[in-house]
Image 1: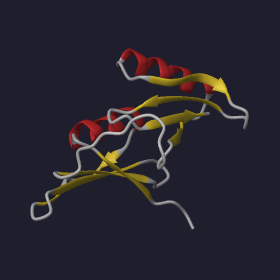
Image 2: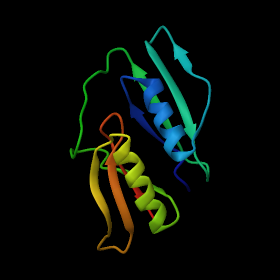
Image 3: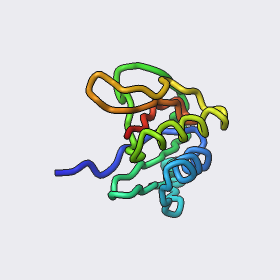
Length: 126
């Protein structure tokens, strides 16, 4: 078995899609729209085949950020410690909130974490 995708709600589909395409080299499909349900989405696929389904529905507008019951974070492997450091500085420069600075964690990963445009915690690991 393997994980295929994670789905995220957003209030701004294009902003979220563009973020994951720009910083993580995702490839987006064309927008899916269901007018009857007030629903639209993009799938952004990453190297290795996993994807994010970025979704918007007119009746879902509440924003949660930080830590709460539910999705805690998801992570992208960027290859090296230098790439973790480099991406952290690029994200900082582009005004994304750094949630945790680059460091070696207790479980042996070199990682940093930041908030995506919707407040989801995303880790980058070496």
